Image (cartoon, rainbow, N blue to C red):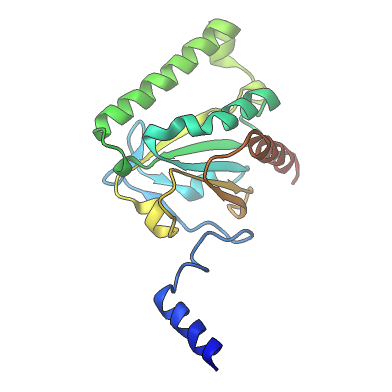
Amino acid sequence: MYLFRFLIIILAVFPFTAWSQPVQGVPIPALVLTEDDGGKLGGGSWHCSDMKGKPCLLVLIHPDKQDLLAPLERAIEEIHLYSNEGSLVKVMDSRLSWKPDRLIQASSWFGQMSGKFIEAKENGLVQALFMDRKNKPASWAIVYDQNLVFRNTLHLNDRPVHIFLLDKRGIIVSYFSGKPSDADAKGWIQIMKKLGTTS
């Protein structure tokens, strides 16, 4: 009897702790980030449903803690994930940073331009611009969340990194929060490649 009362009290005090975290095997909620919430790097609203059609690695990241994604960056490069095999989306949780939103966006824009310059330098300008889609490396799409929309909708804790692996239908295949290891990162990218080649 005392155990039953204890469980009722726990459930009343902590109603969301056990069940509100993202669940493997269910569709990710229909997240939308409007321009008022941040949206896309180049402007406009971002819809999570736009990611359907191929596997997606969706990452919510504290803008000042992007070094925690180094294992993912290495795995993407080493395993050679191509754009036709999956998409990569990095959601900057800019409310958590002390930096102004414009500074965060400028830094992301500069990073993307630097990556394109390096790609053009290594592969040749014409090849970099007109490379066959099958041979084009996957690159991060950058999205901004200035109002904690992502974190609040999914009831996420305050860890700086949350990683979702979604299949082609937008169903959560894997969810992780914290600092990923090299083994974790390689596993996710390998799963993406497999999901990208299956119908």
